[in-house]
Image 1 (spheres, rainbow, N blue to C red):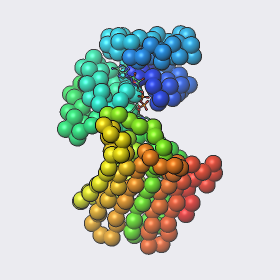
Image 2 (cartoon, protein in one colour; image 1 turned 30 degrees about the vertical axis):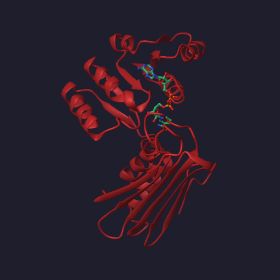
Image 3 (cartoon, rainbow, N blue to C red; image 1 turned 90 degrees about the vertical axis):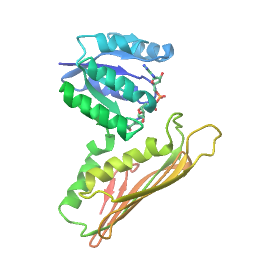
Image 4 (cartoon, rainbow, N blue to C red; image 1 turned 60 degrees about the horizontal axis):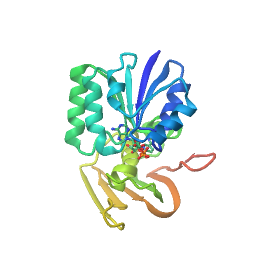
Length: 251
Ligand SMILES: NC(=O)c1ccc[n+]([C@@H]2O[C@H](COP(=O)([O-])OP(=O)(O)OC[C@H]3O[C@@H](n4cnc5c(N)ncnc54)[C@H](O)[C@@H]3O)[C@@H](O)[C@H]2O)c1
């Protein structure tokens, strides 16, 4: 039985606590959040789980093997580093950290400590995305021409990172998983419309060898929620719409 400690019980943390409690082979030993009201909710739902405002208690708990970090992105690096130093395996919410330098340091530290460091790129574990990878790997689409994704909704605003680090991270993880190739060039533009807050609309282009081009459109100010990816090939095309109740992937 893997003992799990979850740091961060805001919007996403409760999903992780629920799943780690449901999955055979793991149990949530403790939950930490800086906000007392969130801990009251956690305690009401899981009376047997310890709650604490101090994440260090989770790191010091020898019955906890793995730490799950679901806090704002700007806190990921320090918390993950401390957890690795405390000898814990670590699952960090996406994105791993705000800079690639910090990501590399965490990866090196995980190797050094011989601990698992994993990022919750949620969609990569979904049946739909696995199916798309299979279609691409089998060459069913033919030569790939474009990868085009729209991920827009109204909020939820993150206050420490831009919409790219919040939403485009999903698309980059999916694209990296589905495609064999990596872009040789990336360009991105974004704009902030709320004073003092990060960029809330962004467009990213990725250029690959051959004829493949990718485009991502992410937006926190959209009046509708859209999660739609088109992958066009010489032979067939895929529509992946994560909001559909059925036929999420159409060829
Ligand atoms: N995988 C997904 O599909 C998915 C979906 C939503 C959010 N996320 C990720 O989850 C993370 C959290 O996002 P959110 O929307 O839940 O944010 P949130 O602001 O709603 O929740 C974060 C919580 O962390 C707590 N916190 C901050 N610092 C802490 C510390 N040092 N110790 C203990 N608690 C602390 C805050 O009090 C807050 O309750 C982000 O990395 C985000 O990208 C992933």
